[in-house]
Amino acid sequence: MKTKLLAILAGSTLLSGAAQASDVVFAHGENPGNPRYVAAEKWAELYAACTGMSVNVAPAATMGNDVEMLTSATAGIIQITANSQGALSQIVPEIGLLGLPFLFADLPSAWAVMDGDVGEMLDSRAQSAGLKVLGFWDNGIRNITHLSKHVTEPADLAGMQIRTPPDQMTIDIFEALGASPAPLAWSELPTALQSGVFDGQENPLTNIHSARLHEITPYVTISGHKYEATPVVAGLGWWSGLDEAAQACALDATAEAGALQRQMSFDANEALQDVMEGEGAIFATANREAFIDATASVYDKHAAQFPELVATLRAAAQGE
Image (cartoon, rainbow, N blue to C red; front, side, top):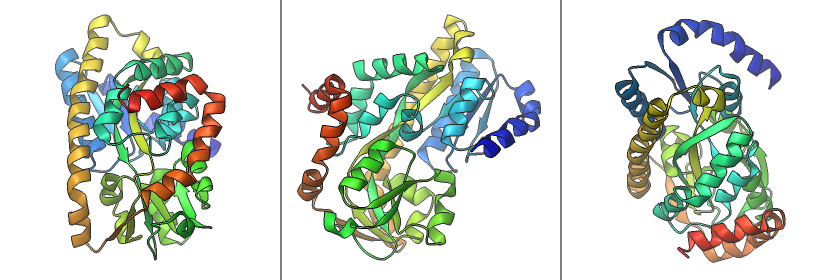
């Protein structure tokens, strides 16, 4: 980690030409075609038009993995990152609660919670750690892929070597299901799957398809076991140096690009099963009730640490 971060810091010298020519560096980890990639380009267009500043978008983890991009934003090497819930939860543990198992019935339910008081509270926690949450884009409801079989019952996951993001909630879920989870950076996942380090992984269909993971792990189980957001995060030092007009431009760009990104994610979630089946993926549906029962202990663990927030989230997710 230290060596890789030093490489990024050194690489920032190579970026200096772009940084001198642009006022903002917006970094993320996705490839062309992914909704996050499209939305980042849209954000750059909107912010540049609103402020007159130029924006350099650095996609596909060219500025490091999600944890490293957050570190770079705090340090002022980059200004903004469309990041991951798991990585940010290492800095703001409360954000990991958005991924409580089977918390949200659907994507609009999750968005409504993040756009309300819960999102404001998470932003406040992030600012205490030197980051500003500009908004929450979508990273979908997640499903499981496997090299050689479907995992429709909790017993099917017993001992499964499964890659997770660097997110304690996801690890807790799969430990409760009897699997052997291990975190790994998103950018390293395809190679790890191809080499057999893992039996499979979990992600929304959008990410699975854009990274072609279904070509490596063709057995896709629709489990819907958790939700993840894509927090759009700015370094607080950069943010605090903007005038109110520029801050408004950043927030408006995040909201408008986020509406596009969320709609793309929603549409993909509806359509991608047919597309992926045409490309050789084999689908099955998990026994949802059995999975819910098997992961009940995850709520007990996190409610012991954050009782009020867990209760608030459960009520908000049910529209109360």
